Image 1 (cartoon, rainbow, N blue to C red):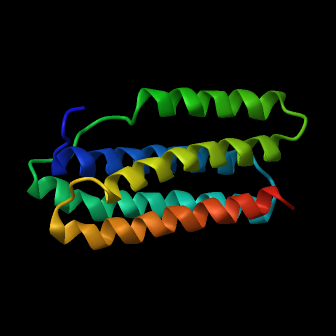
Image 2: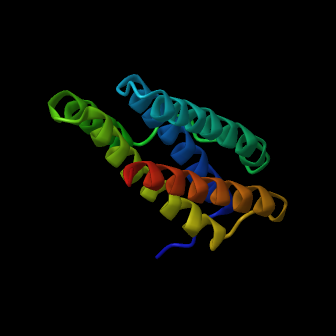
Length: 145
């Protein structure tokens, strides 16, 4: 496996955060429960802030990758919309799909924490990793109720 650069790791995190932001915003549009809608909106904002906080590191390393997110995330958002339309419980479907996306984000953050990171970005990435873990727990708690 090819060794990843600091820039590639930071750009992967930014892309993951942008994908999650879009996914959470879309999920918020498909739920009516104030608690769930509020959680998705807050998590979308959190991921926006996470990506923005990582941008200066990417710029110092040669620039952030431009793009509209990953193709797999776009497919996942399409699947979320499809499930919301067909599910007998659209809110439950959105929560399950948000959890699926969050498991992916957690995997990306776990890999980044154990990968090569700029020393000055490590604390930020570890803090964001904790935020992703907490978000996953919040959604899992909602799923059990």
